[in-house]
Amino acid sequence: MNSLDLIKDLYKYNSDVRKKYIERIFKLPADERYKDRGASFPSLVDILMHIVDAYRWWFLFALNDKLSEYKSLRGKKLYTKEELEDEERKIDSYVADFVSRLREDELDRDVKFENRGEKVSIKMRHILVHLIEEELQHRGELNALLWQMNIEPPITEYEDWKVSKSD
Image (cartoon, rainbow, N blue to C red; front, top):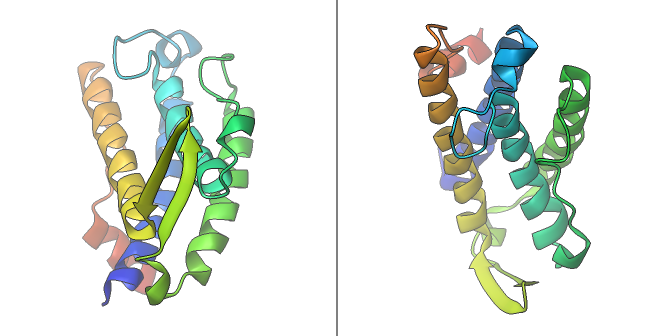
């Protein structure tokens, strides 16, 4: 498997597993899922929304050099399951389409944009890999928070996911 195929596969994996975390967290009582836990973002739902918003920031705004138009989804409200799923579905569809059309030669393309008055140049492959690790980092954080609550997170190992997709 070449690096582009692996990136595409990991985006599909993250997409599938993300939905399991949304399901699991919205089975919790509202006071538990919205409680400020002192983590990277206050609540379990806020962490999920950050994952979704990170994709929006990069794919809709940074890649199109439109950060001046960006409005964060995080911290604005207590998102319901339906609202979070709707935002996740919209960006997930956009990202899946974008990633599926990528070619190997595009991975080393310099992406240029302006962020807070600073001109930024970053390789497409670094953006793609960053978002993979960003989501994995926050899923690990969700795992730790769920374990602290004595709740088993919906951990799905990549190999198990891959085998389930080949059935």
